[in-house]
Amino acid sequence: MIRLSVIILIFATLAACSESVSPRAERVFYRGGGSASWGTVCKLNRRGFLGFGERGYISVAHVTANGTPLVGPKDAITVSDDASDWSFLGIDPAKLDAEDYPALKQDVAVTIHGFPARDRDGEVIPGRLYTDDPVPPFWWVELHDSDDGIAAEGVIGGISGSCVFDADGALIAVVHANGFSAIEGTTGTWARVVPVREAILQAQGRLAFPPVSAPLPAYPEVAPPAVGTGPVYEEIAPAYTAAPPVYEEVAPVFVDPPTYQEVMPASATTRAPAADPALRSYRVIEPPQAPPSVPAYHDILPTPRGAYRPRGIDCPICL
Image 1 (cartoon, rainbow, N blue to C red):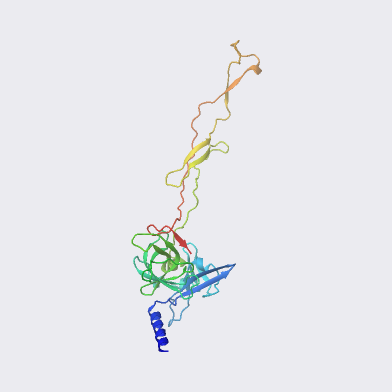
Image 2: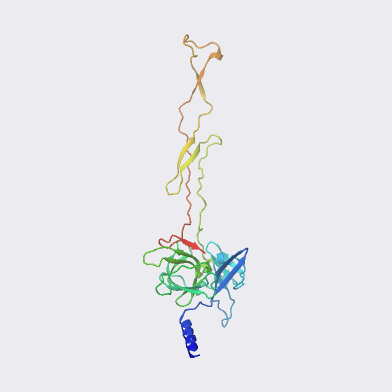
């Protein structure tokens, strides 16, 4: 009996020393159409009289787009954005104050609280803010590992939407994706996150980001020739670089109609033109041709979204 009590006390002590998942991180589970998905939503620190205020959550759009979860808060989506991948649930973001959520800064220590797939107890993953992504509003977090002797491990399905807290316990971001890339001096394991502050400002219409993609390249013709008479061009050097495309003329334009000049009939015994017009022969004379005016083309290059990476991150995996 004494031994059992000692064992229970030891386990209780170890549990008290280990970091537990924040109560502001809540697990969501979806099932439907023969598939299942996991994720996390983060409770906003909505202020109210004596602490009683309208509650609400923030997560990422690709998690909450699954509908109403079987497990987790049933709050409806109030507003979301697919490009920036944020989603507010159960509250109008117009009622939130962006100043309540700190801006992200490099080298700030953070912890990620969330629920990977099939995990009901949750995970706490330490890391540090590394740099902002070329595509706003995203940032990258370098992931560390709390277990001695084990290098930082990547997160798996379900960690999307997890809450990112700073050292003061303030909610500053939610997880969008996980990536792996060997960068000298780092663990090579990353999480791409969405800042809460920017999500609120964008939802309130106070912050706008440029489009994340551009249309396919187009070649508007400045001076098109008349219908049926213009040259046809074939692109032999696709414009995938800053250099303009090169064109080869495969159907040159001829003068129409051709002109004719009478020549001597095909006879070796006479030098006079044949009296009978039917016996006369002709050959086509093509007058000198001025080089056709080549239409000018504007090479409009796309701005591909590409891989989102901090200084060399080349393989993000969106979850």
